[in-house]
Length: 146
Image 1 (cartoon, rainbow, N blue to C red):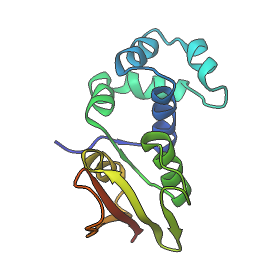
Image 2: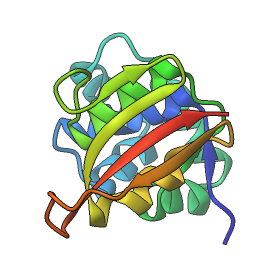
Image 3: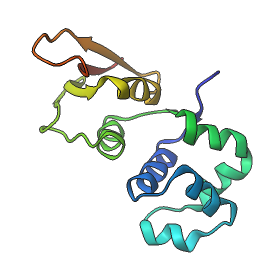
């Protein structure tokens, strides 16, 4: 199956709703009802009409985005940092180092690595580090722009 591709702003909206406790099913129900007021209570800065439009274009694909994951069409460095915080609760300088070419020494749970790999647009690559001091449930990775 080909990755579902969405915009960075759509990813921000989805991850903001998730971080505020909405399940995939609740998100779909609100979008189905076009219930913008409930969504605006979570974040007033987003135009959730865009998310409704994405949902209405192809409901099955949107549900797959929520269930199976997505790739951001074009991901900037700031976009990557924001999604690392929103989706994986990873903060710059605390959980990883920033370099001119990307992210260094990000420690991530092994089971979350596929979601991170899927998320990245084609202008990013992940390099796993061999670190014997870390337990097998975690990986140390660098994320580099190409």
